[in-house]
Length: 224
Image 1 (cartoon, helix red, strand yellow):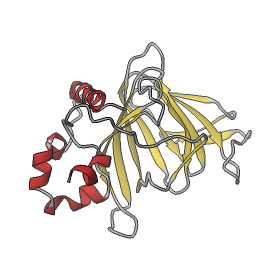
Image 2 (tube, one colour):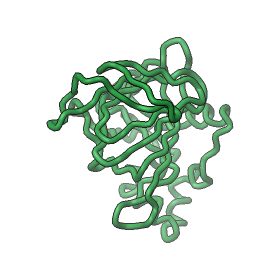
Image 3 (cartoon, rainbow, N blue to C red):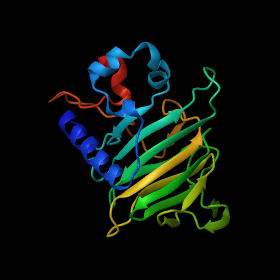
Image 4 (cartoon, rainbow, N blue to C red):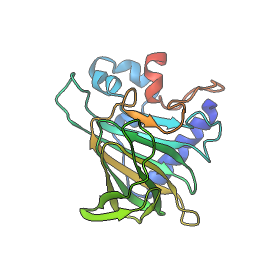
């Protein structure tokens, strides 16, 4: 991805979140110079990968297969006491987050506003392949079931609990507009707890065609 594209996505995301009255921590607005002034007191932010996170999953086509995320809070196993994480995400219509599950993390995915969120579900087998069995899950505490590959549509205000080993693929429903998506979960570890059904790149390779307006979580080591 080009840095100019990432900067544009961040700018659009800030405008969309502001329109939904969703506010980020003050350090979300920091420049590279601001980060360098606050290195000592921001160790947890950098070590736990809090902040801006934009990926095209190696597709080269962010609009079709990509995701905007901002990790607001997150613990680190074996390093601190915080056992939970929270993210905010934005999905465009038909913008896919590929099929995956987590070995350790259990999470609630919440439609915080905008359009409708579509989630496709499968159980996983012991060899991490897709199972053909019905998927049992809960939306806002209500027990439900779909056939393998079944779709769950979350309208604004609705949520789903995704247990460990539950494959899920999600995207914004066509014709309903972009979606503000929340995630509340156990500690998030993108380095070792994502099992994607197909081989992808979790973090983008960035072409530096302009300076970053804000650092991504993958930029901390590079710029600081």
